[in-house]
View 1 (cartoon, rainbow, N blue to C red):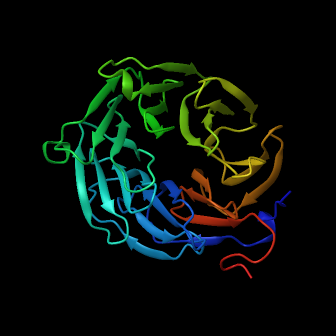
View 2: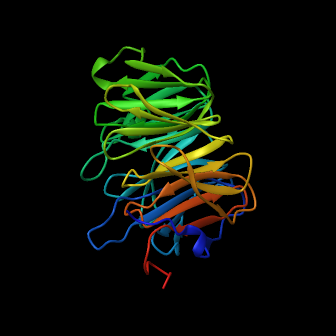
Amino acid sequence: MDELIGSRYVPLTCTGHSRPVTHLSFSTLFEDGSYLMISACKDGTPMLRDGVTGDWIGTYTGHKGAVWSARFSSDASLSVTGGADFTAKVWDTMSGKELMSFPHHHIVRTAAFMPARTGAQLLVTAGNEKKIRIWDLNASATVTHTPLLEWTGAEGTIKSALWVNQTTVVTAGDDKTVRWWDLRSRPTTTASGELVLDGPITQMEEHDDGIIAVCAGSCMYMLSAKSHQLLNKVALSYNSSAVSIHPTRRRFATGSTQDTWVRFHDYESGKILETLKGHHGPVHSISYSPDGQLCASGGEDGTIRLWKTAVGPYGLWK
């Protein structure tokens, strides 16, 4: 079993943002072992970085307000951001060129591409409107701004939406409910499955083996993406803001709305294994790198911190 050693190393601090970092995510692992990281921020300027070193690559310019979500397509050729300017924008990842902009009637809190081996065809967006929209990036929707599908049913702001396969979207938010939506059931506006948790949901993350990690209030939940069943519930001693599962599924990492710490927990028992201190405000987003060698956290202090989580030299740690 790999060893927890985050507290033995000084984290790499990525600066550049001027306001709280609201969301960050990694690309998949490329053939040469490299990967990318993208961050969303209330300063309205999403940033692209080298995932291993945290080095700045570029800034996406175009939003006119806070950006709440930032993700890559499966092959990382495209990026999508959702913002307080009532738009979701699709970018060419490396050039930073804005390719598409989809208008909404309120803040876009989350956006994600359909999983695919190359490129992306469908996009899901959601937020303060309490609606879920599916956009076909290869159709006239990019010109007419007409969604392929539009679902209603949430009773609060939708904070997180993700694809669990090419036909199913999962959403969650302030109404404490995780909902599954099946594209094959269109044009119905009823979710194909629901699971009510114990508190407002701030973030979800899907693991490669079909496990969805959800943080809601002072609990972390593991759900089955396929069966919609609750697999595990871990009570925490603090209110969690974000959660990420290590690729080996031996532990998970969390941020908190109540303090400035990043915590590593045992996956099965929920026991705290290590507590990392470095941020100067609450931690809003957290994610393990695709190879599990580091964990990134974004905070109220406007910084991203990279924490080494494995034995031996890695990246800028020698």
